[in-house]
Image 1 (cartoon, one colour):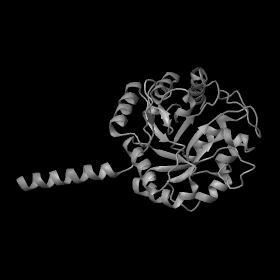
Image 2: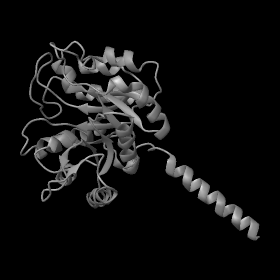
Image 3: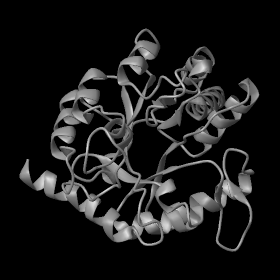
Length: 287
């Protein structure tokens, strides 16, 4: 009996150790709204601290958040929230997230100088149990692919608008992103920003269809024009067919997070963000 107990003890320790090494699993169903894990990119609240971004996300009705590096940690502190945060600060953030019913799911847009920093980024993501990391660091894709496999954490290639005077900036185009990721591990995909696509003259629905099966996460924006820079508007108020985008993501079996990155009305955008989250509830009721 003693040998059996010792065997079970060793087995349990081994199992706990293996689980501890695993990366983030699927985003749980209980944080989804209308079938999607929708919340805020903390950049929406970049005039405020990361603690306040969590509070505002909850106030708007979001249940998940995507952090970005460098945001002030708390309103009463000059400390910054990023992958250099010590464990005690990470513990404080976890407690704050739990208090407000918000789950962290993503981190970016972030880059690393070398493998050491990128490993630190992945360790940070692991400690927060993140689903994915968002980056434009495409010159390090071999490294990112290796780390994505090691940590079992997804990496999404993000797009900002086209830079006409910088031909080396290629991730603005979903065609170019697909070329970069096509033959890589499925954990490497696209972090699609529909607003930046619209600015670049790309119809967002076309972009999603082109990247079918390789979309890790989405920064969902509605805009009033395709082909030029316009302000964000609540979903359904612009020319981006948001419901059609959600239909397409559902068709693809998309399992990542959708971040509302609302880049206007910086000082008071919670009402508009809440309206965007309400769109998901309306979408679910019509389907």
